[in-house]
Image (cartoon, rainbow, N blue to C red; front, top):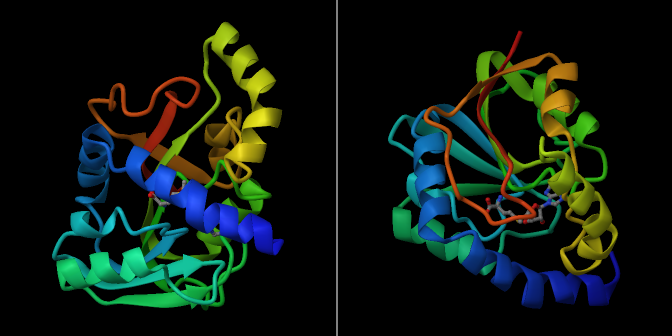
Amino acid sequence: MTRFARWYEERVFNPLMDRALAAPQVSELRRRLLAGARGRVLEVGIGTGLNLPHYPAAVRSLEALVREDALEARVLSRARGTGREVVHVRGDAARAPLVSGCVDTLVCTFVLCSVDDPRAAFAEFARLLAPGGQLLIAEHVRSPRPLERALQRALTPLHRHWACGCRLDRDLGAELASRGFELESLSPPPDGVLPFPARELLCGVARLR
Ligand SMILES: C[S@@+](CC[C@H](N)C(=O)[O-])C[C@H]1O[C@@H](n2cnc3c(N)ncnc32)[C@H](O)[C@@H]1O
């Protein structure tokens, strides 16, 4: 990543995302999704730490897998606010420096639109999960509606540039299934969490078949 790209992501894009992804309807989605987190938890791409207030007491330890050398200041201050320790793990969604089968709960929210290879990330998640482990996932995905899908496809090349690599038209449900996961969607499905062109969500608890 160039110095400008890092500056843009840290100073421009992340603060904008922090506001958009802290909206009440997104917080409600986080609360519902994370209520089932337990044991040793690894959060992938923790961003500014917006999930932190929603982790329940059943979480024994929390590690944050990020590409940066340190956690963002906002993660640390949110962690202090919740009284929870967050351990920094430097790595990538597709390559975590952790032994196989060591994670009880993987958390991945609004990250996979921008990773280079989501299939490789799902394969890594499958490697990391302990037997009976769970992946709590919330991602915006390709729309099932043909017109919206066409618009997402048309917008993605431009959108990727200003939104730090975010693709609007990824079929993450198919990729999740192809890596052996079965998804139990949140019920009732969350409604109106993000606006178009990112309003179609993949959201729930995924377990290895
Ligand atoms: C839109 S933010 C979402 C942050 C947070 N997960 C949330 O729910 O608020 C996307 C995050 O994914 C991270 N990210 C993107 N590609 C990644 C990768 N390959 N591995 C790990 N994190 C990644 C970015 O650094 C950024 O923090």
